Every structure is written in structure tokens, then in C-alpha cells.
Image (tube, rainbow, N blue to C red; front, side):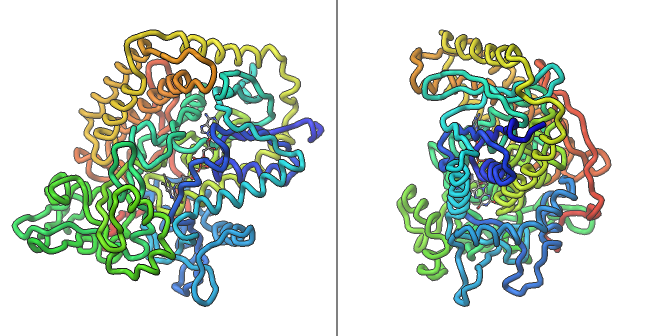
Length: 607
Ligand SMILES: Cc1cc2nc3c(=O)[nH]c(=O)nc-3n(C[C@H](O)[C@H](O)[C@H](O)COP(=O)(O)OP(=O)(O)OC[C@H]3O[C@@H](n4cnc5c(N)ncnc54)[C@H](O)[C@@H]3O)c2cc1C
């Protein structure tokens, strides 16, 4: 088939989408790039702390193999190992690539790239550009994409929302249907391959550290069309966020990477029986809760080697327990101190400027002089659409990259590994999609127009009927309620009874959704109609996440059930694959490829 007839659609202009676009354009393949917001406002722009790559410039003996081991161990062995290994080995060159593109990474006084420590490793492996790394990386890729746009290889469709994949009679993906969010015009677009890079589903949990685009609706739509959703139950709750009424603003792990210490005032009358650290007989280890009235640096005491930089799932659980079970939170509330006041203010400005400003702006106190008050918040999804090692979903011609897919982090993601996995996935998808295009016997142009019309009509009718809804329910209020319930029951500590009640309630919300009122009847920037549709998709995803959690009767990585406190490799060293049915997800399990590193117990306290 002549290459010039073929084109690829990339949905999403974050790091994963832009890198995919660049790799395709470099191979001469035309790309149509879709994004709800201008690509430079994609959520990747918010990433703060850095990107991992074992360059060992500090002479600590770090290596890609160490990075691989930390990632697999940090993910509690749930990730298929070959792609993780390939990513970790590619990481140093990825950092060099961005350095050459002009990203202003911080440097040491000798002029070398600077690296800091992040959670779940003992090495300084995280390259960073102050505390605005995501922005610098995204802008660097945007510049490259604009060169290809200028050359006519890339067409951008900003303010267009993906609604569905166009599947032909053989269920091969031949393009997409999308809506122009400015005027509700629905159109179909032909393509020989489609790549979904639409980011994570943070909004399913209501308030999170994510931006408001991260509904997960695009993935939910692919799921409803037959794509598997994998490991949905693995949701990362970041240990350090600034509590807020509107959202929970991240306080990046880089604050601890630069020496930030987590503490609460001790209480020498209290003893904490730590369920996560056991003695030789398997009993919880007992910790005296510091000295009354003095700072108790509980992470440093419990995890002497990793200290404040234990992996996120570990730090989050401890902070949660210290506040909720031991009642030691600041002023008895759900918050602990994150303290940088012992550090040199000038150095803090140089390395953490952006995030300290955020704290000062929203809390009104200068963290260089007053300890910050923080609490865990929903942050990231290890789960996502299932993909094979070439990043193709189980729908032929539909690829997935970035936080939208599940492949690189297992049961818990290490900090600064996501920017890496997004960029790396783009580098994998590009050449694989080119190979796929070459293998096609038939082009999207050969598919009858009626197939595209059929898919487009489904979406036109759906949006029109949502626009006519005149019920009693308010979609935004229901979404807030759902988010609170998901946060309470499907995050840090999970009980089967509550998970079941949550799923029952989600079914009730699905019923109530039919009674919502869409007050806005205009076609101009009608976000009410689009949000109502996204919310219906979020409900499907919420059920998928909740039921996947209900079925996994073990504790692994971010998934902790006190009723099943141990990891159960025999039954659950498996990827959850959820298939959509109108009655809820149907779950199946797939063996994890652990061919390179033998699973071992995860013991950060005694390592
Ligand atoms: C506050 C914060 C700080 C972080 N800091 C770090 C860090 O320092 N290091 C690290 O490794 N990770 C970090 N992460 C995680 C990391 O930022 C994200 O996982 C990553 O940026 C996701 O990139 P992405 O390309 O997959 O998606 P995104 O950057 O979220 O982009 C998604 C794109 O899809 C588009 N889109 C979504 N839905 C649709 C639709 N239906 N139709 C059309 N377009 C759509 C959006 O417009 C956007 O262009 C951080 C996360 C948060 C929340």
C-alpha cells in the first residue's frame, strides 16, 4: 500500500501523544493530533519533580539494571518485566535527548546534569528542571511537533474531544469520531491506526492532584467498545498534597528528595502496632510514638534506610495510619508536617521554586520558614487500557500510550517514572505503528463511508438526547458524591463490604444518571452536555476499578486489604483484565511475565 495514503490519529497532546506524533512524523507518516485543550496545556505540563534515568553521574554505582530492579520491586512484581527493562535501559538516552533539545535541566557546580533522589530508590537518579520538569519537557516536544506541523505532516485538532473509535466489520480500528467542544459539531476522521494518549482518570475520585481534563472518559469509551481495562484497582495515592476545597494540590516528592522531613508531634503514651512491618513471627512491630511535644520523624524511624523516600504506597499508608488510627495528625486533623525549614532558602529556591510558590500562594505561609501541612491525595493510575508489548490494545489498530495504559508500573509507580514511561511509550508506538501500517492489506480509505456514518450517527444522537435531558438530578453534584465515596472506599484501605456497597451505589448512580437535567441548550461551549456524557463514562470506569479491587483478595502495592494483608502470588501474581458488559465488568486474569527478576518479598523496613 502506498505510504502516502496512510495516516495515523493520535488522541492526546501530553508527553505520550507528542512523542508518538514526533516518531511517526520522523518516519514520514502524516498525523492528525487531537486534544481537548491546546496541547501545551495538557496535564503533563503540571509534572514537577523530574524524570528518572540511571546515568550515574554522581558515581554512586547506579545503573539501568538497578533502575529496572527498583521499578519491578517498587511495583510489587505486577509489571511484565521485559518492557520495564527496555524502558529503564532507554532512560539515560532519553534524558540526553531532552538535554540536546534544550531543556534547562538543573546542573551541578561542575556543569554536569544534576540528579536527585526520589522514592523507592537509594540512588540519585532523577533529572529535573527546577520543579517544573513536565512543563520544560512538554514545551520541548511541542516545539518539535510544530516543525512537523509547519512541514505539513501534522494537523492539530485542538478543542476536539474523542468520542469513539470507528471499528469496521472485522473490528479493526479505522479512525475516530470526535466532537468540536466549541460548537458540538460531530465529525468522523479516517486513519489507518489510532493512538490513545489521553492520560489518567483522576476525576473518578473527585478531588485529586490531577487537572480537570483527566476524566478517563476516552479510555472508558474504548473499554465500552471492547478494549480490556487492566489493573484498574491499582490507584496511586500520593503521600504529600495540600488539602484544598477545590482540589488537592501536589507537593512533589522532590520536596523530600531535597531533604524534606515528615513528622508529627510525638506522644510517648502511645504505641503504634504497625501492620505493615512485621517481626520474625509475623506480628506487627511496635513503635513508641516519639516523645510528647517533640517532633516524631516516624518514616525515618520505621524505614531507616529509605527514610522519607520510601515508595509512595508505603509512605501514604503510614501517614494515613498515623492520622486516622493513632490520632497524631496536626491539631488532630488529617495532616502531617513536611518540613524544609532546615534547608538553605537559596538552594530551595533554585531546586524547588515552583512548588514552594504554589504552597505559599494557596496556604499563605512560606515553606522555607514554616513546615508545610500535607495529607495523601489520589494522584495516578497504574491501571489503564491493556496493551501488548508493542503498545497495541486488543482492538486491532488501536494503540495506547502514557498514563492511559497499564504496562510499566505494576502495583505501584515509583516517582519520576511516569514522564519516562510516557515518552518511552511514544518511542515504542511510533516504529511499531509504522510496521503495522505496512502490514495492512486494506486502507481506511477502502472502508465504505456508511461504516463511518453509522458510528458518527450514534454519537450525534447521543449528544442530542443528552442535550434534551430535563430531569431532577445534577450531574456535578452526583459526580462530587461519587468522588467522595470512591476516595473513602477505594483508595488507601479497602474492605470488601465497603467495596460491594460502593459498587451497589455506583449502579444506583447509573440509574439516576438517566434523570439528570442539562440546563444548557446552546451549542456554543456547552460543557454541560459534554460533562454529562463524560460522567456516564466515569461511572463505568468507577465500577471497573471497584469490582477489580473487590475481586483481588490480597494486598499488593497500592492495593491494601486488612482482611487479606499478605501478597498472594499463587492466586494474584496476575494482571486483571476487565471486559465491559452492560451489567458491569467481566474479569479475567493473565499471568505476569516475571522471567527476568524472581519475585521476592517487599521489605523496605529491613532492606
Ligand atoms: C501534579 C502532578 C505532578 C506530577 N509530577 C510528575 C513528575 O515529576 N514526574 C513523573 O514522572 N510524573 C509526574 N506526574 C505524573 C505525570 O505527570 C503524568 O502521568 C503524565 O504527564 C501523563 O502524561 P500523558 O501524556 O499520558 O497524558 P496527559 O499529559 O494527561 O495528556 C492527556 C492528553 O489527552 C487529551 N485528552 C484527554 N481526553 C481526551 C479526549 N476525550 N479527546 C481528546 N483529547 C483528550 C488532553 O487534552 C491531553 O492533551 C505528575 C502528576 C501530577 C498530577
